[in-house]
Amino acid sequence: MDFLLYNSLTKKKEVFTPISPKEVKLYTCGMTVYDYAHIGHGRKYVMDDILKRTLIYNGYKVKHVQNVTDVGHLVSDADTGQDKLEKGAQKQNKTVWEVAEFFTNNFYESMDALNILRPDVICRATDHIKEQIELIEKLFKNGYAYDTYEAVYFDTSKFEGYGSLFGQQISEKRIGVRERVKTDKNKRNPSDFALWFKRVNHFKDHVMHWDSPWGDGFPGWHIECSSMSMKYLGEQIDIHTGGEDHLSIHHPNEIAQSEGATGKIPFSKFWVHHAFLIVNGTKMSKSLGNYFTLQDVIDKEYDPMALRYLYLNTHYKKPMNFTWESLDASAKGLMRLKQQVEILKNGKGRTILSEDKENKIEEFRTKFMGAINDDLNTSKALATLFEVLKSNIPSEDKYDSVKSFDEVLGLNL
Image (cartoon, rainbow, N blue to C red):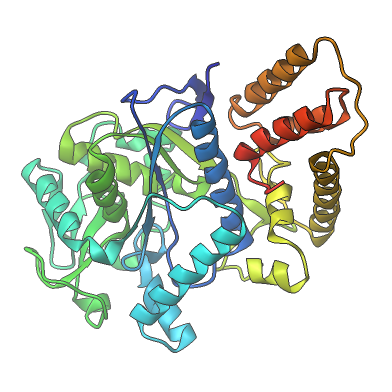
Protein backbone atom coordinates (compact mmCIF):
# COMPACT_ATOMS: atom_id res chain seq x y z
CA MET A 1 0.00 0.00 0.00
CA ASP A 2 1.34 3.43 -0.94
CA PHE A 3 2.21 5.90 1.80
CA LEU A 4 0.95 9.37 0.82
CA LEU A 5 2.62 12.34 2.48
CA TYR A 6 1.98 16.04 1.95
CA ASN A 7 5.13 17.76 0.67
CA SER A 8 5.25 21.46 1.58
CA LEU A 9 7.74 22.09 -1.22
CA THR A 10 5.43 20.85 -3.98
CA LYS A 11 2.19 21.67 -2.12
CA LYS A 12 0.60 18.30 -2.78
CA LYS A 13 0.37 14.80 -1.40
CA GLU A 14 2.89 12.49 -2.99
CA VAL A 15 3.66 8.79 -2.80
CA PHE A 16 6.61 8.46 -0.46
CA THR A 17 9.62 6.56 -1.76
CA PRO A 18 13.00 6.88 -0.04
CA ILE A 19 16.16 7.87 -1.87
CA SER A 20 17.70 4.56 -0.82
CA PRO A 21 15.48 1.46 -0.53
CA LYS A 22 17.47 0.35 2.52
CA GLU A 23 16.84 3.25 4.89
CA VAL A 24 14.72 6.38 5.40
CA LYS A 25 16.76 9.41 6.42
CA LEU A 26 14.61 11.54 8.75
CA TYR A 27 15.63 14.89 10.26
CA THR A 28 13.30 16.59 12.73
CA CYS A 29 14.04 20.16 13.85
CA GLY A 30 14.72 20.02 17.57
CA MET A 31 14.46 22.47 20.44
CA THR A 32 16.27 25.68 21.19
CA VAL A 33 17.01 24.82 24.80
CA TYR A 34 16.68 28.13 26.63
CA ASP A 35 13.35 27.51 28.38
CA TYR A 36 10.76 24.81 29.06
CA ALA A 37 9.12 23.10 26.10
CA HIS A 38 5.39 23.83 25.96
CA ILE A 39 2.55 21.59 24.84
CA GLY A 40 2.55 23.28 21.44
CA HIS A 41 6.00 21.80 20.96
CA GLY A 42 4.61 18.54 22.31
CA ARG A 43 2.08 18.37 19.50
CA LYS A 44 4.79 18.80 16.85
CA TYR A 45 7.02 16.11 18.34
CA VAL A 46 4.17 13.64 18.88
CA MET A 47 3.24 13.99 15.22
CA ASP A 48 6.90 13.56 14.21
CA ASP A 49 6.73 10.39 16.27
CA ILE A 50 3.58 9.25 14.42
CA LEU A 51 5.41 9.83 11.14
CA LYS A 52 8.39 7.78 12.29
CA ARG A 53 6.19 4.97 13.65
CA THR A 54 4.20 4.93 10.40
CA LEU A 55 7.37 4.54 8.36
CA ILE A 56 8.45 1.64 10.59
CA TYR A 57 4.95 0.10 10.38
CA ASN A 58 5.30 0.19 6.60
CA GLY A 59 8.46 -1.86 6.88
CA TYR A 60 11.05 0.88 6.50
CA LYS A 61 14.21 1.14 8.54
CA VAL A 62 14.46 4.73 9.80
CA LYS A 63 17.57 6.67 10.78
CA HIS A 64 16.32 9.61 12.81
CA VAL A 65 18.47 12.65 13.61
CA GLN A 66 17.41 15.58 15.78
CA ASN A 67 19.35 18.71 16.66
CA VAL A 68 19.63 20.53 19.97
CA THR A 69 20.14 24.25 19.33
CA ASP A 70 22.24 25.57 22.19
CA VAL A 71 23.74 28.61 20.45
CA GLY A 72 23.03 30.97 17.56
CA HIS A 73 19.22 31.11 17.56
CA LEU A 74 18.34 34.76 18.00
CA VAL A 75 15.06 36.08 19.35
CA SER A 76 13.75 36.37 15.79
CA ASP A 77 14.26 33.59 13.27
CA ALA A 78 15.54 36.30 10.90
CA ASP A 79 18.68 37.09 12.91
CA THR A 80 17.04 39.67 15.17
CA GLY A 81 18.30 40.71 18.58
CA GLN A 82 19.62 38.67 21.46
CA ASP A 83 20.76 35.05 21.44
CA LYS A 84 17.98 32.99 23.06
CA LEU A 85 20.44 31.06 25.25
CA GLU A 86 21.74 34.27 26.78
CA LYS A 87 18.17 35.44 27.29
CA GLY A 88 17.38 32.17 29.07
CA ALA A 89 20.53 32.41 31.20
CA GLN A 90 19.53 35.88 32.39
CA LYS A 91 16.02 34.70 33.22
CA GLN A 92 17.20 31.61 35.11
CA ASN A 93 20.24 33.29 36.69
CA LYS A 94 22.47 30.52 35.37
CA THR A 95 25.28 30.23 32.84
CA VAL A 96 24.34 29.57 29.23
CA TRP A 97 25.92 26.12 29.51
CA GLU A 98 23.89 25.28 32.62
CA VAL A 99 20.70 26.50 30.94
CA ALA A 100 21.36 24.41 27.83
CA GLU A 101 22.05 21.26 29.86
CA PHE A 102 19.03 21.69 32.13
CA PHE A 103 16.50 22.37 29.39
CA THR A 104 17.89 19.67 27.09
CA ASN A 105 17.34 17.10 29.84
CA ASN A 106 13.92 18.55 30.65
CA PHE A 107 12.88 18.42 26.99
CA TYR A 108 13.72 14.76 26.52
CA GLU A 109 12.15 13.81 29.84
CA SER A 110 8.95 15.50 28.63
CA MET A 111 9.13 13.68 25.29
CA ASP A 112 9.62 10.37 27.12
CA ALA A 113 6.48 11.07 29.14
CA LEU A 114 4.57 11.50 25.85
CA ASN A 115 5.92 8.11 24.70
CA ILE A 116 7.94 9.62 21.86
CA LEU A 117 10.63 7.33 20.49
CA ARG A 118 14.08 8.80 21.02
CA PRO A 119 16.04 9.83 17.89
CA ASP A 120 18.94 7.62 16.82
CA VAL A 121 21.20 10.69 16.92
CA ILE A 122 20.75 13.74 19.17
CA CYS A 123 23.29 16.37 18.15
CA ARG A 124 24.12 19.65 19.88
CA ALA A 125 25.12 22.65 17.80
CA THR A 126 28.01 23.48 20.15
CA ASP A 127 29.51 20.02 19.54
CA HIS A 128 29.59 20.62 15.77
CA ILE A 129 31.29 24.00 15.32
CA LYS A 130 33.98 22.40 13.12
CA GLU A 131 31.38 21.00 10.73
CA GLN A 132 29.60 24.35 10.52
CA ILE A 133 32.82 26.18 9.71
CA GLU A 134 33.64 23.62 7.01
CA LEU A 135 30.21 24.08 5.42
CA ILE A 136 30.61 27.86 5.38
CA GLU A 137 34.00 27.39 3.70
CA LYS A 138 32.30 25.37 0.94
CA LEU A 139 29.81 28.21 0.44
CA PHE A 140 32.67 30.67 0.03
CA LYS A 141 34.32 28.34 -2.48
CA ASN A 142 31.08 28.09 -4.47
CA GLY A 143 30.49 31.84 -4.45
CA TYR A 144 27.47 31.97 -2.13
CA ALA A 145 29.04 33.52 0.99
CA TYR A 146 30.61 36.90 1.66
CA ASP A 147 32.33 38.53 4.60
CA THR A 148 31.60 41.89 6.28
CA TYR A 149 32.82 43.53 9.46
CA GLU A 150 29.83 42.22 11.41
CA ALA A 151 29.11 38.80 9.97
CA VAL A 152 29.41 36.26 7.20
CA TYR A 153 26.30 36.22 5.03
CA PHE A 154 24.70 33.95 2.46
CA ASP A 155 24.05 35.87 -0.76
CA THR A 156 20.45 34.94 -1.58
CA SER A 157 20.63 36.65 -4.99
CA LYS A 158 23.06 33.95 -6.11
CA PHE A 159 20.67 31.09 -5.32
CA GLU A 160 18.16 30.62 -8.11
CA GLY A 161 14.58 30.27 -6.87
CA TYR A 162 15.29 31.41 -3.31
CA GLY A 163 12.48 33.95 -3.44
CA SER A 164 9.79 31.36 -4.20
CA LEU A 165 10.68 28.41 -1.96
CA PHE A 166 7.54 27.06 -0.26
CA GLY A 167 5.58 29.70 -2.21
CA GLN A 168 6.94 32.57 -0.11
CA GLN A 169 7.76 35.86 -1.77
CA ILE A 170 11.10 37.57 -1.16
CA SER A 171 9.29 40.46 0.54
CA GLU A 172 7.94 38.06 3.17
CA LYS A 173 11.45 36.88 3.97
CA ARG A 174 12.49 40.42 4.85
CA ILE A 175 10.05 40.59 7.74
CA GLY A 176 11.80 40.68 11.09
CA VAL A 177 15.25 41.52 9.73
CA ARG A 178 16.84 43.51 12.53
CA GLU A 179 17.50 47.18 12.17
CA ARG A 180 21.18 46.63 12.96
CA VAL A 181 21.56 44.44 9.88
CA LYS A 182 19.66 46.87 7.66
CA THR A 183 22.24 49.55 8.44
CA ASP A 184 25.16 47.28 7.52
CA LYS A 185 26.34 49.04 4.36
CA ASN A 186 28.20 45.92 3.27
CA LYS A 187 25.14 43.68 3.36
CA ARG A 188 24.14 43.09 -0.26
CA ASN A 189 20.47 42.09 0.00
CA PRO A 190 17.88 42.54 2.79
CA SER A 191 17.04 38.82 2.60
CA ASP A 192 20.66 37.67 3.04
CA PHE A 193 21.07 35.67 6.24
CA ALA A 194 23.94 35.25 8.67
CA LEU A 195 26.09 32.14 8.57
CA TRP A 196 28.54 33.35 11.22
CA PHE A 197 28.21 36.25 13.66
CA LYS A 198 31.36 38.08 14.67
CA ARG A 199 32.03 39.12 18.24
CA VAL A 200 31.74 42.83 17.53
CA ASN A 201 29.20 45.62 18.13
CA HIS A 202 25.96 44.07 19.40
CA PHE A 203 27.66 40.72 20.06
CA LYS A 204 31.01 41.91 21.42
CA ASP A 205 30.26 40.30 24.82
CA HIS A 206 28.66 37.12 23.49
CA VAL A 207 29.53 34.37 25.97
CA MET A 208 29.67 31.43 23.56
CA HIS A 209 32.30 31.98 20.90
CA TRP A 210 34.89 30.15 18.81
CA ASP A 211 37.77 30.94 16.49
CA SER A 212 37.03 30.83 12.77
CA PRO A 213 38.68 31.91 9.50
CA TRP A 214 36.51 35.06 9.73
CA GLY A 215 37.32 35.94 13.32
CA ASP A 216 36.07 35.15 16.81
CA GLY A 217 32.32 34.55 16.88
CA PHE A 218 29.52 32.01 16.74
CA PRO A 219 27.37 30.30 14.08
CA GLY A 220 23.99 31.42 12.84
CA TRP A 221 21.03 29.20 13.59
CA HIS A 222 20.35 28.10 10.02
CA ILE A 223 23.80 26.66 9.28
CA GLU A 224 23.57 24.30 12.28
CA CYS A 225 20.81 22.09 10.88
CA SER A 226 22.44 21.73 7.46
CA SER A 227 25.84 20.80 8.83
CA MET A 228 24.54 18.29 11.37
CA SER A 229 22.06 16.60 9.05
CA MET A 230 24.85 16.18 6.47
CA LYS A 231 27.24 14.74 9.05
CA TYR A 232 24.85 12.00 10.12
CA LEU A 233 22.53 11.51 7.12
CA GLY A 234 24.58 12.56 4.11
CA GLU A 235 24.13 15.39 1.63
CA GLN A 236 20.55 14.43 0.72
CA ILE A 237 17.79 13.27 3.04
CA ASP A 238 14.29 11.87 2.64
CA ILE A 239 12.16 13.87 5.11
CA HIS A 240 12.74 17.08 7.03
CA THR A 241 10.09 18.25 9.52
CA GLY A 242 9.40 21.44 11.42
CA GLY A 243 6.70 23.84 12.53
CA GLU A 244 4.84 25.93 9.97
CA ASP A 245 6.70 28.99 11.29
CA HIS A 246 9.81 27.64 9.55
CA LEU A 247 8.24 27.93 6.10
CA SER A 248 9.24 31.53 5.45
CA ILE A 249 12.79 31.79 6.76
CA HIS A 250 14.54 28.86 8.44
CA HIS A 251 13.79 26.10 5.94
CA PRO A 252 14.33 28.17 2.77
CA ASN A 253 17.69 29.15 4.26
CA GLU A 254 18.53 25.52 4.96
CA ILE A 255 17.73 24.55 1.39
CA ALA A 256 19.75 27.42 -0.08
CA GLN A 257 22.89 26.81 1.95
CA SER A 258 22.72 23.01 1.68
CA GLU A 259 22.21 22.89 -2.07
CA GLY A 260 24.59 25.82 -2.52
CA ALA A 261 27.34 23.90 -0.72
CA THR A 262 26.85 20.49 -2.34
CA GLY A 263 25.17 21.22 -5.68
CA LYS A 264 22.86 18.29 -5.01
CA ILE A 265 19.11 18.82 -5.49
CA PRO A 266 16.98 18.30 -3.54
CA PHE A 267 18.54 18.67 -0.13
CA SER A 268 15.41 17.03 1.29
CA LYS A 269 12.94 15.11 -0.85
CA PHE A 270 9.95 15.79 1.46
CA TRP A 271 9.24 18.70 3.79
CA VAL A 272 6.60 18.21 6.51
CA HIS A 273 5.28 21.19 8.47
CA HIS A 274 3.04 21.01 11.52
CA ALA A 275 0.28 23.50 12.27
CA PHE A 276 0.26 25.47 15.52
CA LEU A 277 -1.46 24.68 18.76
CA ILE A 278 -3.83 27.58 19.48
CA VAL A 279 -4.92 29.02 22.83
CA ASN A 280 -7.95 31.31 22.69
CA GLY A 281 -7.38 31.91 18.99
CA THR A 282 -3.68 32.80 19.39
CA LYS A 283 -0.58 30.72 18.68
CA MET A 284 0.86 29.22 21.84
CA SER A 285 4.35 30.62 22.25
CA LYS A 286 6.93 31.54 24.86
CA SER A 287 7.22 35.08 23.56
CA LEU A 288 3.50 35.69 24.17
CA GLY A 289 3.59 33.98 27.57
CA ASN A 290 0.38 32.05 26.83
CA TYR A 291 1.81 28.58 27.07
CA PHE A 292 1.43 25.50 29.25
CA THR A 293 4.14 22.94 29.89
CA LEU A 294 3.77 19.21 30.32
CA GLN A 295 4.39 19.76 34.02
CA ASP A 296 1.31 22.00 34.11
CA VAL A 297 -0.66 19.07 32.69
CA ILE A 298 0.79 16.68 35.27
CA ASP A 299 0.19 19.16 38.11
CA LYS A 300 -3.50 19.12 37.20
CA GLU A 301 -3.33 15.32 37.62
CA TYR A 302 -3.68 14.42 33.95
CA ASP A 303 -1.80 11.51 32.43
CA PRO A 304 0.52 12.88 29.69
CA MET A 305 -0.91 10.16 27.42
CA ALA A 306 -4.27 11.97 27.56
CA LEU A 307 -2.52 14.88 25.88
CA ARG A 308 -1.09 12.59 23.22
CA TYR A 309 -4.57 11.16 22.65
CA LEU A 310 -5.92 14.69 22.29
CA TYR A 311 -3.30 15.52 19.65
CA LEU A 312 -4.28 12.48 17.58
CA ASN A 313 -7.84 13.71 17.13
CA THR A 314 -6.76 16.63 14.90
CA HIS A 315 -4.79 16.33 11.66
CA TYR A 316 -1.26 17.66 11.96
CA LYS A 317 -1.80 20.23 9.19
CA LYS A 318 -4.82 21.80 10.91
CA PRO A 319 -4.55 24.31 13.77
CA MET A 320 -5.71 22.82 17.06
CA ASN A 321 -7.33 24.87 19.82
CA PHE A 322 -6.33 23.71 23.30
CA THR A 323 -8.64 24.00 26.30
CA TRP A 324 -8.55 22.27 29.65
CA GLU A 325 -12.09 21.06 28.93
CA SER A 326 -10.90 19.29 25.77
CA LEU A 327 -8.04 17.68 27.70
CA ASP A 328 -10.50 16.53 30.36
CA ALA A 329 -12.70 14.90 27.71
CA SER A 330 -9.61 13.30 26.18
CA ALA A 331 -8.53 11.89 29.53
CA LYS A 332 -11.94 10.32 30.09
CA GLY A 333 -12.01 8.93 26.56
CA LEU A 334 -8.57 7.38 26.91
CA MET A 335 -9.53 5.84 30.25
CA ARG A 336 -12.59 4.17 28.68
CA LEU A 337 -10.45 2.92 25.81
CA LYS A 338 -7.88 1.42 28.15
CA GLN A 339 -10.62 -0.24 30.18
CA GLN A 340 -11.98 -1.90 27.03
CA VAL A 341 -8.52 -3.11 26.07
CA GLU A 342 -7.93 -4.45 29.58
CA ILE A 343 -11.16 -6.46 29.33
CA LEU A 344 -9.96 -7.94 26.04
CA LYS A 345 -6.57 -8.74 27.54
CA ASN A 346 -8.26 -10.75 30.29
CA GLY A 347 -10.41 -12.58 27.73
CA LYS A 348 -13.70 -11.32 29.15
CA GLY A 349 -15.12 -9.61 26.10
CA ARG A 350 -18.35 -10.86 24.48
CA THR A 351 -17.67 -11.87 20.90
CA ILE A 352 -19.23 -13.99 18.18
CA LEU A 353 -16.98 -16.20 16.12
CA SER A 354 -17.60 -15.14 12.56
CA GLU A 355 -17.05 -17.55 9.71
CA ASP A 356 -15.14 -14.88 7.78
CA LYS A 357 -13.04 -13.84 10.79
CA GLU A 358 -9.77 -13.69 8.91
CA ASN A 359 -11.28 -11.54 6.18
CA LYS A 360 -12.67 -9.11 8.74
CA ILE A 361 -9.35 -8.84 10.56
CA GLU A 362 -7.55 -8.14 7.30
CA GLU A 363 -10.25 -5.64 6.33
CA PHE A 364 -9.67 -3.69 9.55
CA ARG A 365 -5.91 -3.81 9.09
CA THR A 366 -6.22 -2.52 5.54
CA LYS A 367 -8.57 0.22 6.68
CA PHE A 368 -6.18 1.29 9.42
CA MET A 369 -3.24 1.29 7.03
CA GLY A 370 -5.28 3.26 4.51
CA ALA A 371 -6.00 5.92 7.13
CA ILE A 372 -2.51 6.30 8.57
CA ASN A 373 -0.93 6.09 5.10
CA ASP A 374 -3.15 8.93 3.89
CA ASP A 375 -0.92 11.73 5.16
CA LEU A 376 -1.07 10.51 8.78
CA ASN A 377 -4.84 10.68 9.23
CA THR A 378 -4.75 9.80 12.93
CA SER A 379 -8.40 10.61 13.68
CA LYS A 380 -9.54 8.19 10.97
CA ALA A 381 -7.06 5.60 12.24
CA LEU A 382 -8.54 5.95 15.74
CA ALA A 383 -12.03 5.52 14.30
CA THR A 384 -10.91 2.22 12.78
CA LEU A 385 -9.59 1.08 16.15
CA PHE A 386 -13.02 1.74 17.68
CA GLU A 387 -14.66 -0.21 14.85
CA VAL A 388 -12.52 -3.18 15.82
CA LEU A 389 -13.63 -2.91 19.44
CA LYS A 390 -17.29 -2.86 18.37
CA SER A 391 -16.93 -5.76 15.94
CA ASN A 392 -17.82 -9.40 16.48
CA ILE A 393 -14.37 -10.86 15.92
CA PRO A 394 -12.99 -12.87 18.89
CA SER A 395 -11.60 -10.98 21.86
CA GLU A 396 -8.06 -12.23 21.39
CA ASP A 397 -8.10 -11.02 17.78
CA LYS A 398 -9.47 -7.65 18.81
CA TYR A 399 -6.69 -7.36 21.35
CA ASP A 400 -4.01 -8.33 18.82
CA SER A 401 -5.37 -5.81 16.30
CA VAL A 402 -5.50 -2.98 18.85
CA LYS A 403 -1.95 -3.71 20.01
CA SER A 404 -0.77 -3.73 16.41
CA PHE A 405 -2.44 -0.39 15.70
CA ASP A 406 -0.93 1.03 18.88
CA GLU A 407 2.54 0.46 17.43
CA VAL A 408 1.70 3.55 15.37
CA LEU A 409 -0.57 5.45 17.78
CA GLY A 410 1.79 5.01 20.73
CA LEU A 411 -0.90 5.25 23.42
CA ASN A 412 0.46 2.37 25.53
CA LEU A 413 -2.87 0.52 25.30
